[in-house]
Length: 209
Image (cartoon, rainbow, N blue to C red):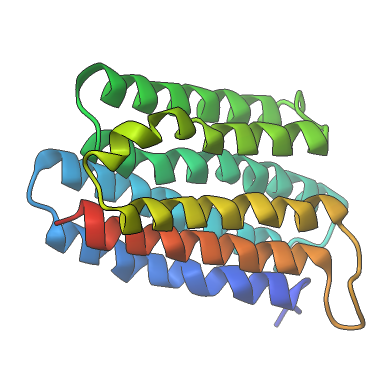
């Protein structure tokens, strides 16, 4: 049996990957419209893929070639997770031009980011993190309109998730040992999990009703 290369990073993301499966079906059970079904599938698949690929990357690849291969897809999945997390809000909260503009914009950026990562055109960590945060901030100009359709508690949960993700990038960028048993990347993983949980609760209780 092969030894897991980074046990903490592996377990902090393989558990959410497993939970994403029943979590997605719970959303599907609450779906009543085609838009809700579509949003649930996209959101659920992106969540599962992010945590699944991340846990794979941090577990068994041992050679530098294997690590670099999986790292590319790990980084691509961050773009997919951001776009997937936006999808329920774009499709279920907004209407008309804003709905489809936000949906198209976030997915075009995500796909472009994935292509650049795969072909090694986006190697700078600071630039990548800036793009991640900028994607998350696209919702800010629309908060006023959201407040007309959702209660403050819903918007608060959505923003809390965003703050977890954004705050976690500090530890992602730091990339250093924080103590005898903890590395900053492991803290980043915990922030990602907290952000994902916040957004799932937001979706479950406020968008899939």
